[in-house]
Length: 221
Length: 260
Image (cartoon, rainbow over all chains, first blue to last red):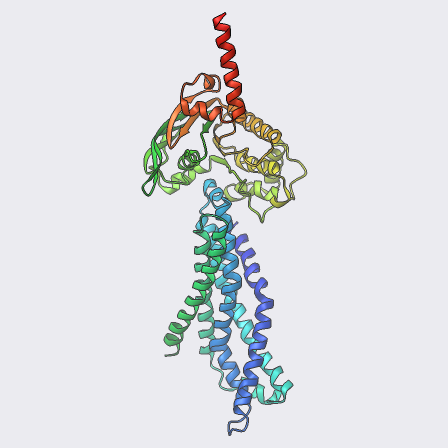
């Protein structure tokens, strides 16, 4: 039952968030590429540097942080309202009466699914962003595909990938645990579900940004 | 058998239950009745352990449930079935999956055995051809029947029903009442039902406990209910003007008979 529930949550969190992550990441990469190219135009810095800067900024910051802020809104509000509704309609009480450990049955699979799927989503986000930058650069004529790819392949550091994965895992844990807590302990009337969802999103965003700063400081120092 | 011994429950400074003691016998339909806000639901939730009593004890067949550790409590909980006021069915699961849920969680039966057991209890509660429907596609009565089926699928020793008739029309209420009564007698389980529906009280009340403002005011059976001289209970039974008038007419009639 726990394994099945984890699989369901992996599909909900991973597959359910894929489209929005793809769209947003593509345009973040595209805009970053055009902006860097615009700033570099007329300077002595070679244009292949655009690919390098887009790749580094996506891997180290934009892909994990922006993706997780989006996921805090989409997944966080979803989890908080799902658990809040279960609490208010006595579904959690029904599980407790059956002798089910509600915390491990309801929250455990969600946490596990988020910790597995969010790093995968963030990796997809970084890749899509780089592809977005490639398309935008060549489409606007700022940077050729060859120059862009030269920059992307330049100075590749495996450590940066681990920084991205670590950030994504921590952010996934933070936003899921905050959202589940808000939903699980919701009480009162239906209006409380909305309030719990809002609290979940706001607190998750703040905690993601705070942990982003701490992780960047610790991992890149 | 369930024994409640001097159970009190407070929320902050507000005392919701005040030293309630009563005995609920096996194979009988025990009713907790009272007005809204009298503490019925809090008492029921304190008995099943969804709320921890501020003081007092609850004994399930002699075992002190309040003093148990969570592992032992879970053992007792697997012998408990509960029908919630709103059904509390899992929205994302079909009727069959809802009823099968306790079997999936706590038994090693094969899928076909589980499905057979589910069909058996669904037939018992007269809910056929609804296996693949979701709770949102069911009527109130069907949701209650699914809740009853889920509550009895593990052959519980204790059945708790929190206002089983709320939101149902009078005819469906009678059907649900009869079903609870039949299941109680058939499986010889200890049933505790929390209600303010007088029809249920009159038909199902093997044992009745009347609560008023968190205190037990009266205890008896459906046969002794109308002989009770507790003012709050009389007000509760004859709540409507129509019933009060009917009672006054009856009293006048009796008085005139006595004068003759």
